[in-house]
Length: 275
Length: 275
Image 1: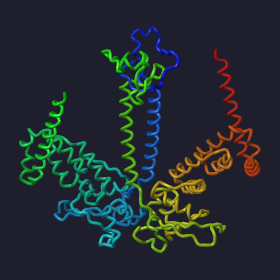
Image 2: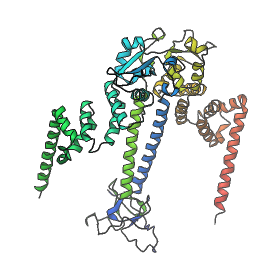
Image 3: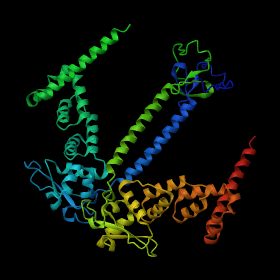
């Protein structure tokens, strides 16, 4: 079936376009001339694609407005401290960074105020904790162990805004919290950030971290980076440390490497046997 | 400047494509042939547009995940009644549909439980009401006048989900509430729905409603529909009622009609005076 045929001769360019020949047409988008091998779409498809793009942009605007509506101001924006936690924000619980080993320093941690309803709706762990009349629900205080005040504050703030200002350390800290309290959206957010920061220098540490905290995308990305650079691997300090600390993870690296080699070989074979 | 020129002859179609001539190229999208007058884009622009589309779709997926995260289960999903409003949802306020003129019937309205923190973050009116220790804040009961229980329930639910199941009556009711409590997102949502339902039959009523509740998009759409059908207007019952009830609104219709006529005439003049 043929379509989009001109019914009349319609050479748009003038005869003074010396370079144009029967094989050139003018691109409706970049306005340059193209030959047959560079042909893209017909006008109808171009217009359809433009409409689709407009629709997608409208959908994005709608979704952004929805996010803005559903976002909370966070109780932390109001600079509320423990003493005024029953104030105009109507918070009914506080989270406190606690460290059994005293690593957080000598000063007692400032409590982070929050709403039980918000915690419960974002985390199944908080839901179980607060709805089942456990100690935390009665006392109105939730202790979070082995976390800095900054990380805890950023963690709670994320529940209200779905946003966090990340650097690598914060992303590591938040991913651990997100995994512990089953906040999937935050975990994916941190993982995406950490994958974007992946490089040869941090690949082995990232691999071990991803393994420990069940971060699949990060694990795959780190493993792929490592198996692409096996010749340099054994000289790295982190490698030697990992052999000492968790040799099973090192075995998995070699297994992945072997599997990649076999696949590549099989691919080459099938290519070379083709006529 | 010329680009996208083939360096070698690259006629893709075989000579057996009897219909193809030097003026046809094949669309990369719909696979059909097109002539010069139907040329769309070159390959490079097509590929760029495809990438843009993919990026926009990824952005939409990200935003949808964000909306899903920020959405609340609503306390209404838990089938909570007044008696258990201090239960596992941690609600701390109830809204009650009240009607001074007794129009909501003889049965007392079922209270709709909610969280002060949610009401305050979605509506500046509730914010002022609840943060300033007014009667409603002390009693934990907010009376909403002239509204049905269903509309109130849907109104509160929207605060948690940014969604509502609308029919025309519900959209009218919610738009009034959204205007009264300054919930802009909901107002825009209802207005969009009502504009989509606009027709000649409901145009005059819609126009008066939009005027009364400051719904600008709806007002413009209704006015445009009315001024396109002025010959039929004066016979309509709603028109005669409006002349009785609020003649200034009728004057505005005539002013808009006149302005449209003048514009059209000016446009015609400038077209006809062109050489």
